Amino acid sequence: MPPISKKAQVPSAWKVEELRLLLSAIDRNSPIGKRDYAMIVLACVLGLRISDIKALRFSNFDWNNKTLSIVQQKTKKPLTLPLPDQVGWAVIDYIREGRPKYDGTDVVFLKHMPPFDAVSDNDHLEQRIIYHMNKAGLRRDKSRHSGFHSLRHSAASMMLEMETPLPVITTVL
Image (cartoon, rainbow, N blue to C red; front, side, top):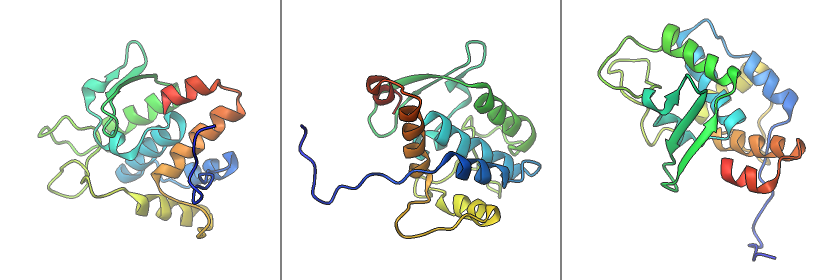
């Protein structure tokens, strides 16, 4: 048994119905809504860290083979994941219809106010999730996280519930 800190807690995760409510509350007709939806789907379906989502470049996507390949920001390990249709189409919709028409960078997700730079390393975009939680009528409380990392935990929980082998979950995350 690996040593576990006495302060360790089970990570908070979203229920499937809560994720549905969150995603349905996002205005996918607005450019920022398209961006937020794509980023949240990347986190809750693929379990990507927000740092990896913010660092995504067009070259990370292999649309023909429906895969996403990155070098993880935190671990520096390469990772290639299948790109489910829901995730791929959300990203494509953002790129085509929501992303500012700016050729100064090949970073996929940009701020929507000039200058159209990549989202800052210090901005973990928790406020965007909270905004959509409020629209969806989802309560925030101290016992539960509401940032992008909680979506990563949710992806792991859902994989466990689908009886995905632990080595696969470990590899994905």
